[in-house]
Image 1 (cartoon, rainbow, N blue to C red):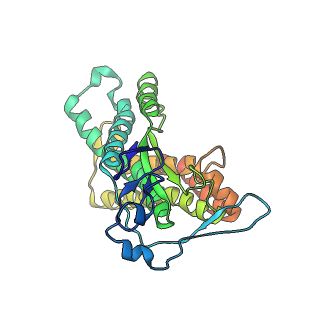
Image 2: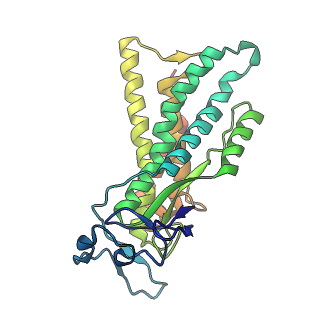
Image 3: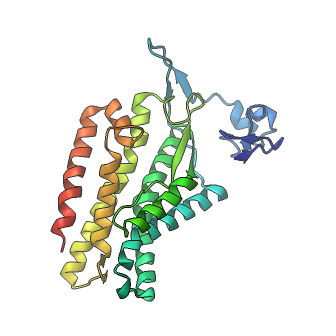
Length: 281
């Protein structure tokens, strides 16, 4: 948990001062209460949120802000652990059968897999974080220890054929909700759709790299590992899976916001995820 810079109190949902960037508790959240060095900016009239009156419970419409996103040391550690866990989980299948084990080759595969996972999983999560912060929310990636352990266990038990890719997630707080439910539907949909869009963009980049490498006669293949093909497959899988309109996945929030946008993105992603990797030798 974060601690208040003034009194040291632990806060599960810390208040981040948008003028000085400090972390504060509920009692010291206002610039006047923590002697904010940029208090003159705080006194300038700059509305950030406005409440909408609806028959349903009040939602907050978030307005874009010029805030520059930052990643704390604690968050960087969580992202690094998640990257290592997923990279190892996706690389385990290249260890089987064990009689063909080559440690040097496996370490090379692990390094290349980290690049693929970096664009796929981390790119997806950071897209949520940066977009949410643009709308004035507090957003931070937090490691889910049980999820990280399950990712490794499932990969080991299935010989790398199944990976439970959920070592953590970006938590978003709008002050009226902790998982984005306090945002209006449009804002929540935009924040949610950015992750799969990044996966789609990354898949297209890997696909372009595959084509360019093929024309140039260059191959980055180690055993069963094909850098560009696996980059396409993993990013399409992550994007397609997250667009399922169920539970708390991105697809459920996008579907609630705009069914047309959900269909335009999810249907091509599902088709591509099941066809394109099979077409790449």
